[in-house]
Each structure stands twice: as structure tokens, then as C-alpha cells.
Amino acid sequence: MTGVAGQAPLLAVDDLRVTLNTPRGPADALRGISFQLQRGQTLGLIGESGCGKSITALALMGLLPESARAAGSLRLDGRELLGLPEDSWCQLRGNRLAMVFQEPMTALNPLHRIGHQIAEPLRLHKGLSASAARAEALRLLERVQLPQAAQRLEAYPHQLSGGQRQRVVIAIALACGPDVLIADEPTTALDVTIQREVLDLIAQLVAEDGMALLLISHDLGVMAENVERLLVMYGGTVVEAGPTEAVFHHRAHPYTRGLFAARPQLGLRAAAQSAGGAGRRHRLATIPGRVPELIDLPAGCGFADRCGLAQDACRAGPPPPLQITPDHLARCLRLDAAQGLA
Image 1 (cartoon, rainbow, N blue to C red):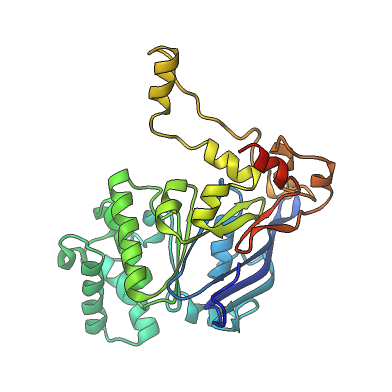
Image 2: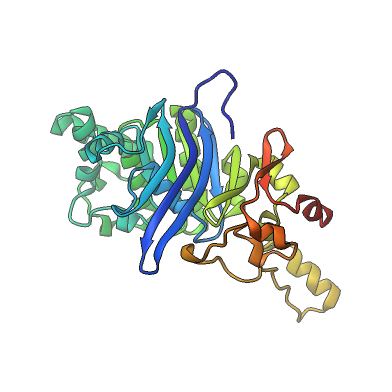
């Protein structure tokens, strides 16, 4: 992925590789991730659990396990972040880089009041006094549309609903006006109505503040409505990348096609009942097999063992990125055959 012509990217990730220590030996969790983000741009990471999405987010935040080894390049405004000491990462996290975690109850400290948790990064990074930080914490809660914001400052996390806790997590992430906001499955624990409200809120705040957004999800519908560009991940690498509309339209990689085929679609059940009787139910398509363990990733295409188009060449080595259009790439040696299935 490239940035805007003539403009240096805000965040540049180049051939990012992460190796984790496991009981069975070293495992390649990320195998060469590359992308760029400009201010105000929105980028999505999608794939099944275990494909490397959350590891990517943790690497960008400098939160990998101590035993993990990271290689490649990760630059923020031209500054290399890989290899920084922990105190330098602490100056960036919550300040220029912020993250909305998947489960708000575990992201919040159950022993501290909401107001204290929002004020903490303001006092740490901005040097605000206790009273100024509290006033700003109230403004942030009002900005994320938390009902009865003034009273909620004194509440503990367990006294809030799931949707309210997620708004608090977003307020904490936004406290210092970050340049990059990473949202890792921010609506998984919420009901459908609250999901929509939270996603709309994130989109509104990104647009108002000009932040770059990296949104991680397994939900294709969420991606279609919330990001400009899309990276499809599998086996610790990006198998397809491009503008969201182009990826949705072409579905070049067999794995991308499998994800789309497996999604529920309104009207399919009614059509199946009409064709075969009211008692029949439509069964969703599934991708055969399962995501391999990190330690068991093959040397070649990570999807080869689940792909009906795979040949010996697919297992021999990692496939190179091939252009569908100048801005749309896929890593697959069988692109012609995959396109023939459309």
C-alpha cells in the first residue's frame, strides 16, 4: 500500500515481522506486513481469529510480549519505533498512539473510578492539574455521548453497561488527541444497536480530529461502512489489499472469496424456502479446515491446505503480491483460476 503521492505517510509499516516463543518453539506470528496511513485515512484489517490482526495492533502499540522478536520497520512521522526503549514507548502510548480494546471490562481498572482513569493520561502526557484533568475528563465523556456524564465520573467500571464502558474506553483513547487510533474489534461485546452507535461515534471523531484509524474486525459489513482501504489477513500476512470497494467487488484471493461466501445474507433463507419448501433451511458456506497454529504455518501460501485451487507451487514458497489494478494487490499464484470462479 502506498500513501498520497508526494506526501510522507503518518504511519509507515514496512515488512513487519514478529516471532513469538511458544512451548513448541519459535512461531512466525507476522510474516512481512506492509502498509501506510495518512492523517484522516481509515484502514481495515479483516480475517479469522488467529490470522495476525491483534498481533499487528500490539506491535504498533509496542505491547508485544517481552520474549517476542520484531523486525522490519515501523515509523511514525519518519521516526523509527522498533527498538525504542520502554520509556519512549510510554511517551507515545496514550499520547500519539491510542487503542480501543476489544473488551472494555478488561481494559478498565476495576479499582479506580472512571474520572480518574480518563484524567490519568491527561496528567501524565499533558501535565494538567487534577482539577483541569477532571474538567477535561467530563468534556470527553460528554463528547462520547455518555448519559449523565458528570455523575459517571465517580462510577466504577462494574456500575456501567457494556456500551457505556466502551464509550469510556474511547474517551480514554481520545484524551490526548492521538495521531493514530487503533480499534481492535471495538463492538464485539455489544448488541447490534450499541455497535452502530459506537462505530458512528468513532467515525465522527476521526473525521472531526483528522486522526488516522486502523479498524480491526472479522465483520465484513463493519468494514464496508467504516474504512476506505482494506487488508485481508491470513497466516500472519496480507493476502489481499486495496480500496474497500475494489476488494469487495473483485474478491481476488480465494480466502477473500471464502470469507464473503460464509457471511449471512438477508433473503437467502426466504429464497431457499421458496425453492424447496417451508421446512428447509439454508446452510451457510464454510471454508474447509481451520486456521493453522502459528507454529504449523507452511513455508508457502498459508491458505494452501484449505484452498481447492492449490497446487504444489503454492506450497513451495510465499507467493509474491500481484497487481489486479495499480492500487489493488493479492498474493496468489492462482489468481486467474480464482477469477474464473466468479
